[in-house]
Length: 517
Image (cartoon, rainbow, N blue to C red):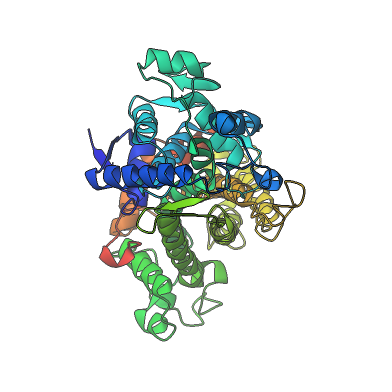
């Protein structure tokens, strides 16, 4: 089984995906173990000096000015977890939960949280033995971090709450017993170290960036097939055009489309007016593919850089600096970086869907499709009796419209909490979850374009497809048959969306220059 070593510094998004979706084993590095021990020793020393430490010898939030008696130090940490387990709504998915647990473990391994090594080891054991806390989706405002969802995670660590183990939902106590993991008895500072941070929103963000990178490449495959179905013009993808507007993503997108179309007999290098050709260039939904999808490539790379920093950050409060012998209070739990990044990515993803829907509409419209039959249904099938791809465009339009509402930024909102002491929050969790919803909607839209374009090129002759697009066509037809007469197509769309999610089309025909890095 693949192994992912955590040390608080070197985790990457591919590691997160390996653990979250493919159950890679997690191991704590020796260096990280030493850092965790030193931070704990420093905290113990500070407690002996009887210095006030927020969340350790005081209450939390607006109650941070209330001193806590030493006899109540441990009870304070347990009560923090119980009182903050107030989430509502549907549970987070399995892969998000595993990513959340991994990111929390990686933050603790960084060595600034002051937890005991045994506490970190318990969390890692839960990941490796697949004890997955049931964590409601809603209830976090993204500062002080994702307090509520992380508290639900910690509930299971202490033998409370609910968890999924071996496919069955049960009490946290039962899950820990069945997996032979001893629950944690929270010690000084451990509650606030475990539930204070950005791990829910960042877990979603990490998986979302991974899926977004695959989606933009798949969208280029769909666009290339549509270009062939619509007998498009490739002049707009000439490298000379893109070198004089040298955005990296734009140049990569143009090269990738040309690579996919290599050898195609359906597209034209250029067109002169006359001989039945009314326009010497294509509409924007075809001609501007590199400028639009290229921008998404660049935005995804930028967001990826933000997420990579966040997953290797110390995000709780206060933080223990063993080298200086101090415990400092700050605001690393604040999720503004992830919140704004998720809003930015959400807008970019919605743009993929908007562009794709316009090509779908063109493919089914006989007045715009360069001779394709109405709604992509064979004339032998009696157009009128058969509706063909008519309502697939309805679905794409509905999803594209929904995405426009979901694209309204969450990061500009704030509702004060904790008696106005926590008076500016990030709303990062909502920014992340709505971006995830947009991703799903766009996967459906691109799935519909792939189905429509595959149907369209059959009227042109699939033997004339480019090398890359022919590979894509064959992959599609290996699972979804041609629409020869009307049938319920929801299942076709779901199968195609699943193929996109499984990265079955993203790397088709892609050379080095077409990959995101």
